[in-house]
Amino acid sequence: MNWTGVMPAITTCFDRDYKIDHDFVANHCRWLVEHGCTGIVPLGSLGEGATLEYAEKVAVIETCVRSVGKKVPVVAAISSLRTTEAVELAKAAADKGCAGVMILPPYVYRGDWREMKSHLVAVMRATKLPCMLYNNPVSYGTDFLPEQIAELANEHKNLEAVKESSTDVRRVTAIRALLGDRLAVFMGVDDAIVEGVQAGAVGWIAGLVNALPEESVDLFRFAAEGKIDEASAIYKWFLPLLRMDTVPKFVQLIKLVQQEAGMGNARVRPPRMELEGKELDEARAIIRAALKTRPGRNAERETTRA
Image (cartoon, rainbow, N blue to C red; front, side):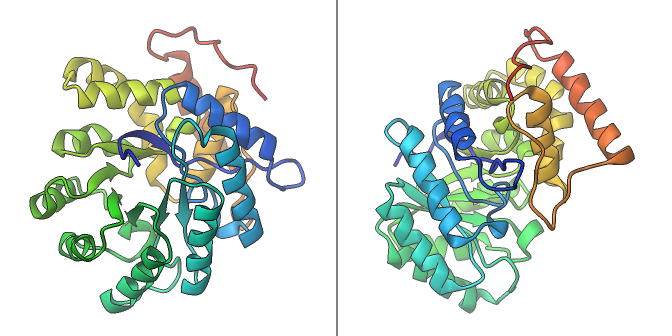
């Protein structure tokens, strides 16, 4: 497992009946890889994992592995309200050909460190796959502190990476101060990617990449190579869209960007609902302004995809 580069946390596309559109998911994965993405991460928050049945999650894993699993690693997000189900999903991910798993805390219950550690350890022990820890205290209310992450890494060899989404870029340097290169640190918030790379992050679990992979890969590459002027130019253009990744309706917004860019639709499963009214108009204005000024691109390019 090579933990590096831009790995999309992919959205889950739904058809008009709100069933998973597996043909689109497969094509979307291939398109992302063709544009330089180094892995695929299905079933996370952006993938609306909380609205998917267990069998649907396994089916999405199968689709992703079948479409791109021989080219790049597929890293399944493991999330459940029940530790036993999380364990079973991790086992299924291995059986279906995933190269790794990304472990989330339970969505609802905000337990203490003893309970959360027990949950994570149960999943890590259930599989030999390389594991990534997902730390997102803003969304989940559970904060894995650098010292706790170091404790897990020192006790479990298959914990190899962490997706750091605390929005505090200092966490990157704090983790590296404790563990050096023992864990690969990925940024998990889109609008802090350049700062995160400068602090030592080696990868990006990205959101807006679902619609704009070429720009996302270029941005990460320029930042990683220390090409500050080039990175700054893309970042300045990209930030109004990247900020859509860090608000409560990030799923609706990113799917809307996909629809406007011609790669997907805006359908979301309840309890989420598509944007409407003033909220929709304001979002579309931002998106369309950005698409018209894509760096070095024809404003009309790639707008014919369904």
